[in-house]
Image 1 (cartoon, rainbow, N blue to C red):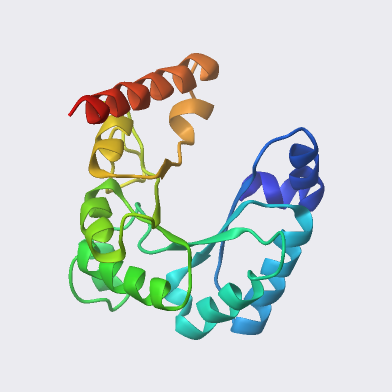
Image 2 (cartoon, one colour; image 1 turned 90 degrees about the horizontal axis):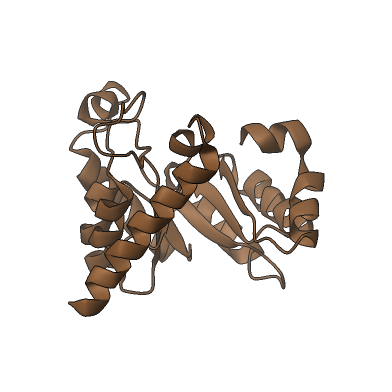
Length: 203
């Protein structure tokens, strides 16, 4: 989000021209018409994945999903409950129940609206996989190395733990961008993912 606000669609187009797929993590949350327009803009830029907040409601998500049926549109991923939020934070904004309950509620709403996948913490992956099916794209942020500071994140996991739970993709930010050697940090996470995939293959 920070980089997109600084550079805009030209950055997305440049990355696509270099052969990369772009996950545009803008977490759209507005009235249905505005979000549908944003999906059209992301399509023109060439994004492959685009996030929107499931909390925007069924009508908003359905408008986005309908717009994303156009050729070249990104796959839509609904953010359920941010990994920086715990039960106390949810209660403060009037949501009763646990994060896991709210995640499942919003995921079902998103799937019914035609959204391709969801963002959740590793703690909810197994329940969402069971509820939404094996083909649902489950994207997991809040990735931290064992013993590392969680900072503002509340519901965290290691890369291996998230993959073991059934995550489709991981979102990793500060453990790489703030590392002394970002390339080495990224490679370590890739190695952890690969090791977990090998374990699953053998089992």
